Amino acid sequence: MTPQEQEIKAMKSEIIKELRAVFKANMKVFDWDIPENDDDASAQLILDTMQEALDELKEEVKAGKYNNY
Image (cartoon, rainbow, N blue to C red; front, side):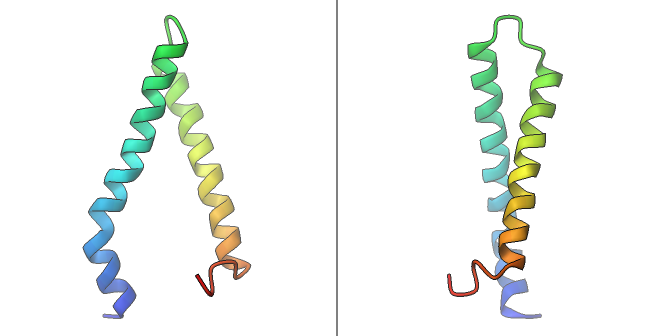
């Protein structure tokens, strides 16, 4: 097992927890800001935006932006 695989094994649950916290925080904002909010529609919009950000990060990694991080 590589050092990176060992590290992700140790950090995986924390990363998932943090990602869920970002999602839930944004769901709360939608509920606060939009009377009679459609939670399913809001959730999908938030997930789409999060996926867009992940896709951008993947492209940045692929382009070498984090090689000397």
